[in-house]
Image (cartoon, rainbow, N blue to C red):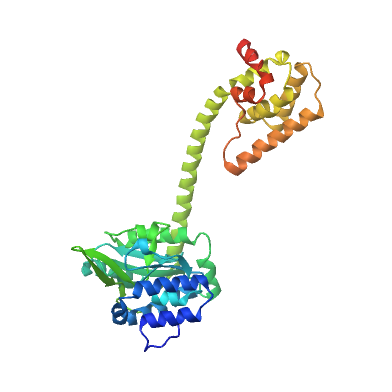
Length: 385
């Protein structure tokens, strides 16, 4: 992954040389133009911290081995407003090496404990407590006011590379890791944390050996996120008993969330069903007075009666029988066109609810008359009914 350039060249010359070699790749040229702009006038900063950028490449290579599609995001010296587009680390290795500040999204199986206090003693206490569970994190000082403890996790049974990758890419791994994180904090009694780094889905993490540019007394200062105990992320193989505990807590959480969701839906459904049936009471009056229907039977079945009966909870067979009796009581013959209309609308209502989780509502009387002025007489049917 390392970009081959001459060590004797300055950073602007290196980036310009790369730009010439990658001529034709518009996105690569865009990135390189941005990098050249960022480093121009700051060459001395790069020279001072050059060895850290080389170490950052090694650490990103370790992440790529776990997660080949790793997305990184570069940030300039002026902060977020100067942020570039996100890129795949594997496709643009020069960006990993030269971006002033590099972020990546937390890996699905990564735990990041942020101690929001620069006091080294707080960090030491947290690390000692983690060691009780045989967790030895990569310890990084943020370069400003906090400590980041990084741990990449695998279950104890994941011994082969395939099993590890299967675990990383499993859709439940993120949820499992977040519950595991809470269990670790509880067992280790660690306080004073910024849990957002771990639990917020959209959170970006600054890669080790990246700058932290911050304001202090009105001046911009630069700190570097430096690991204190090595140049690679630490891996923890989760003991089986903690895997089982995490799975139990995840299942409990899912059941609680499902029960809560079910109660909310049931409550909303009861309220909305009651309100809806009241709102569509005019349809019931049409059903109760078939002898007053002169015209528009097919449209009434399609737009109002069939969806109304679905809303009330009747089965398909019951709906068809009610509609048949209503047509015949109105003095008309139950024809195949009526049967087809009813069956089609009932299927539509059922499918709509499956896809959206919401009921398909019958047409309102005012809307019906607006669309079909010849059915205005229905107002009299409703009033007299």
